[in-house]
Image (tube, rainbow, N blue to C red):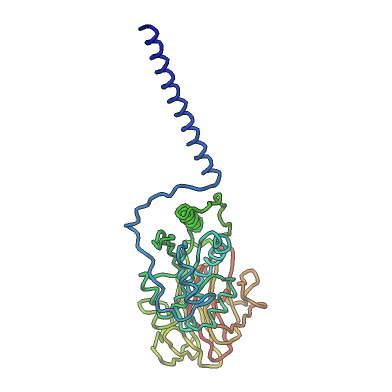
Length: 370
């Protein structure tokens, strides 16, 4: 009797242990199946991130005009979105070079939860005019919202000091990325992908497979080039850029004489010019601008209509150096307040540039070089 009892107890223990092992195996299989189901649906568990070190994106304040949107629509769109804030201005060549990437990201990710907002903070007075900015956003194919920050109130709220600058806020409004100037496009897009994935995970949405990055040829800057040259006395303060002996004369009309020689990285005026806050305006029927520069690309920011003739190293501009906006031979007609590309070449070099102007009232704001 005792032997039978012992055998029964042993068998009972074996059965219990076996059931436990089998249950564990099935539980493990269930867990593995569930995990695989999650992977197959591309749903990832929410990852807790300590956001105490991140600042929140400030509100858009002091906006003069809303383009491609309304205040009410934009306020609703921002909620729960990953937001790329692009601080730019339309005559800035560095800003312009970033736009193909930004518009491509808008096309690629807007349906996945990315909202791009262009914060247009003007450098010059003509960039405060709504019609001018509307022409620019049409020219560059911008369909995302653009807000005109004419008094720099949103610029100040972001504590910004540069054009262009990109801030990216996650779906909870925390600024997770900040980049100044051109470049870092792959890095920026990877951040967009990461934050969209976080958003989808947090909201329990399906996450698409990682996408390839936007492939656009990036402009290659030369390591040594002439810095931006400002014609307005206000922006030129602290810079020794006007080579003419007559110098800057605030709000005065000055006759500038032909220079004896040119110094590198300085510009020279010939004719009668009005010294304005952010530009020089030609007051004689004709005049010219000369500059000795080192770069592979030259752009000018101008306003008011005029026909310009471009000379390089004392001869009419050769086609191999013609910029994108040169129309025929060495001539270009400027009209709308905008940036115009007049010189474009493969290699950086030092050249003497002369621009001859035949129209009173022509205004020039800057030279920029690439």
